[in-house]
Length: 611
Image (cartoon, rainbow, N blue to C red):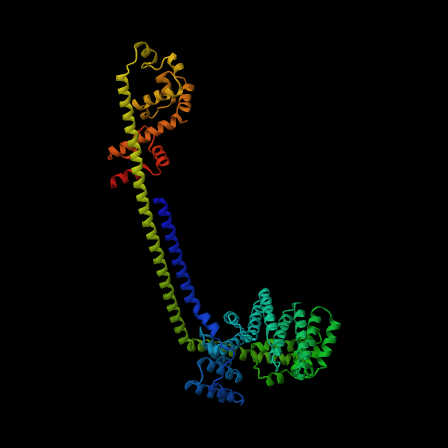
């Protein structure tokens, strides 16, 4: 009954410990994830335009971006624009003014905010996407990848359809950075993700989302073409299919459709040339050049990559004569990237076309621009680093403070959890110890009572025999036939005694003369003492008793004797008790004691002493 109640109590204890652990775990997860869940459910479906936004956007559409910047700063100072929206507008203004370092600085400030307010969520994402594009353009691939992945993680927690457009741009930029780092397998995966979001981007009456999707596919096609990878053909096909969908829209922009068709032809020409299909490539290029876009300055410059690949150097050199005008019209600077992408191909085209003088002039132009471009690049990088260090000082301090707060909170939760677990384990250990002690006391009482009962039974049995002998004396003749000598049992008696009587005789002999206390006592000892055969003794123990063997019977007597000694002589140690009880070693004694009583002799002695 006691053991059943103990098991029930332990089951309840484990249940309570489990419930406490579950509650603590849920509390930690809830506290860690509550902010993200709240953000997910609080994101508005549409961007809420404030009065300050209306004023700032009106200034932007004037085309005077210095005025736009001044208006934005004023609105931010009086609190009409939130910091995220103000820095987003500043980034756009600096970009239009060509101040790329300040543009990146403004977008970085937005991106440094860990948990943007729900009403500014889409401004935050858009600024972050622009930052990724700028970082990719500046070849800051590591920061571009980390920023893109962080934004992707935030967007995947939303269900807004607008997320598809941002995600395709982010995956496109991520793929571009991976491609530049020669991580082609990862780039392919990112590009495929971008395509999946292209398919999920909803269009509207302006067809701007659809046009952006086509631009995404074209950028991926160009990336594969520049790396001379055959997958470019797949992406050109996808671009072509999307252009066909655009054409079927109710109100497509005709000029844009023609431009996109021309670009499809150009990219097909580049893919065919890359595959060695030169005739087909020439036909596609001819189709491209017959378009209005192909005949413009931008179109002729874009077609130079195909012409150089097709070894049509003279045509490429002719087109490159408009390069300076193209650079000026588009507001580009002759930085290192422009030199590598435009002037170097122009030099090769003129050289292979046999126009040595033109090639020499281009080489001189590269030499003159290279030092200036290199110095500008170094200054730009240094200025960007200085700006980052200056402008992100507060953000870094805030981030460190938030990190310390999170760390302290996490440590507090961990310490509380560990303390509760230690307390639960200590309680469990204490209760287990109490249960063990009580179980041991019960076992000790049971063992002691059993041994005392056996001793009293032996005393009572001896007294009964004495009374029987006194009242019923055996005749002399009979006594001679049934008596035993000190040397043993006569042969005639051996044959007339039953197994049961012989067992009783041998038992009394072992117990009364304490033969079991001899460490070397065995069946041979009985043979030598009684003169009986090995088989006769074995039959007496197997047939005359409850099928107990001689070793088991002797071991039982020794254990009972050891229990009596430990009860009566508590000053003896286990080694002394084992020797006095007839065991060959203390290990053998301990092993047999535990097997019978469920505890060690040491535990038995300690329990007796505590009582």
